[in-house]
Amino acid sequence: MNKLLTVIALLLGTIVYAADNEVYINQSGATFNADIEQMGSGNIIGGTGSTAGSMTALDLDGASMTLDINMIGSTNKFLGDIWADNYTGFFEFDGSSNVFNMQTDPTNAFGADGSNVNVDVTGGSNVFTLNHATSALASQLDLDWIIQGSNNSITAAIDVDGATNYMSLDGSDNTVTYNGDGYAGGYFHLTHDGGSRTFNIDQASTLDNDWLKVESTGSSGVVCINQNDQGTAVGC
Image (cartoon, rainbow, N blue to C red; front, side, top):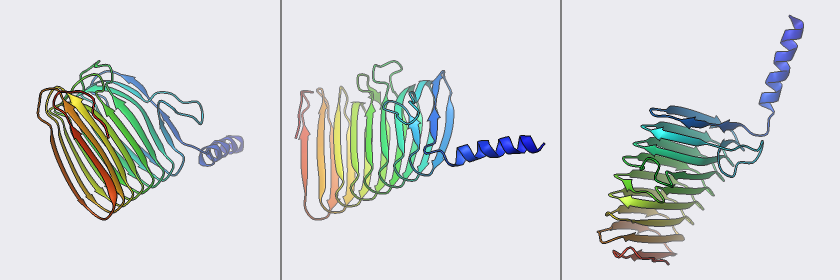
């Protein structure tokens, strides 16, 4: 009995003092539900670009998925690919210097239709990149961001098909880069409170209407907006 207890204590010690917690998921099939929470610093849910123990994946393939991610702490990373139709995702980050880098259905394997994605951030100096349906069409995507903090960088690229993108941003020295293209109208609504902002917004749906509403309160900053209904390249 004493030997058994000694082994258990050593294993627990290894878990407690590990530098990083890591989650590796490679999943295929419909109706997948995942609820993942990590607390602390230096954790990874990976993914492309994973390091630490040479991780790969997060690779989720299938339709009708629900994904609930909570990362509480600093210098954490969520990385990877989702290939899904009608998927619901909630991503919560509390802390600073976190990285969120995800692409959804880049080669049109499932269509990326009907997705409902929420990103909730509290903290500063975070970097967020979301590429949704980069060579497909994001039909009826409902994307919502709530970000509270300064010095954050948010980049979103959506191949729109009636997609909506709502962003509420509270803090100074934040950067937003949004690129929406595709074949049907997209709607982007940005509300912001804080100074020294940088907004670069491109909308280029081919022969369709794009809608944009920006409400920003604060001093100094750079705002560049381009719209082109011919679907050709635009840029700031």
